[in-house]
Amino acid sequence: MPLYRDIVCAPRPRLQTQHTKTARKSPVRTGHNGSKLTAAAMRPECGALVCSIPPKQTATNDDDEFKTIQRKRNKQRNMRGTLQNSCRILVNEPKISIYLSRAVKSTSEQDIRDHISDMREKCEDVTLLKQNREVDFNSFKITIFASKINTFLSKDFWPNGLVFRR
Image (cartoon, rainbow, N blue to C red):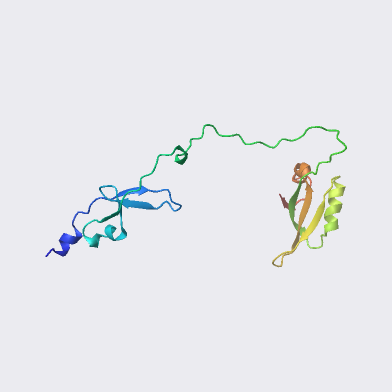
């Protein structure tokens, strides 16, 4: 009668792993002669290995192999037109928003619009932002054309102490 030590510590036959072309890419265990093993044969408590299914013969097919990429294709980049005097096609200029804060509570949207027009600039929209908690200042969102971003983000454009950012 074998001892527990002999069963547990006995050297097991080495199993080879072979990948098949299935959707799950699960490994198939094979025995020493290349035949597939059953689930019972793979468990160590069964004792000996039992070969149940003979190996499947597959024809070599060149379509099943991987193809190497010869050269990476270049991405087509966006280009921009440069014609200045076209009257039929108009371009929509991109707009961006600027955050303006630390204005006195009494400051309104019209006051911001008036300041921008006094500085000889134009803005698309001025929105008073609602605060989540009670603060003693107002904040605004100003929508402008992207071409005017440097003018609106300069320190000389806004009064002293006003906080602004893109």
